[in-house]
Image (tube, rainbow, N blue to C red; front, side, top):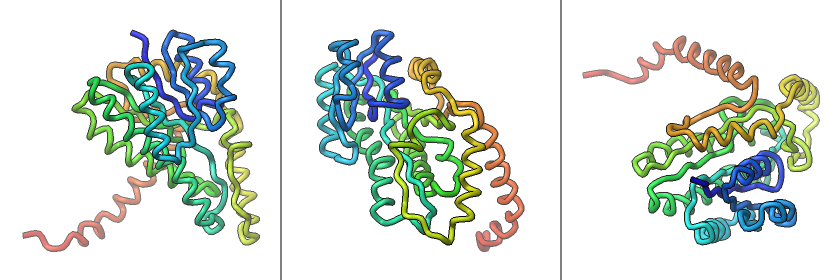
Length: 276
């Protein structure tokens, strides 16, 4: 049966690609954007199958209203994609309070508010699938985007707990972790902190590392079929990478963590205290 989707950040990048993929196969999509004019071509092409919604996901009341409007329009919500987000560049010392809070308001709290609004609808219908769009930066961390990493790590922790809480309602949760893609994540949509000269040399090295990671960026269009397979799976995964490269990064990172934990296990056990 056709599915009904709710996708945040649908004006460009992944959100737009996935909206098109869903619409082309006959699904319905509530598509949110800060400027709904960016969705006009989708409305012209797909008509009433698209519900364009103006939304800033940092506005909790607006999030609730948008989800309710989508549910009322289409009668159900099968797939919720929390895709809205942006990259924040800056060393940890350079990030201002406003920049840090704004990053979490969008990347974490926006997803939280949308998820909370959608869950009652999904519980009532006895099914649903929440896709939280994280990043390889949600399980690893890289210099000059530390506050972005922090927001995605928080999203992952929240979502892993959520998956356990809602499984009994036949609601599934998938954390999608893309590698580097040819989107404007690091371009027009990104924010940049004021640079401190103490980090100038390191900033150059960090930029070189990022350039190597992005030497062969993925094609966002190629993710369309992958998303459709995920939402159609009987038992979708809790976590899944998109792109070629994240598994190698994760493997190195987790092997290093395990080795360190094992090396320091005697200290850890001693810190437990006496056992009666």
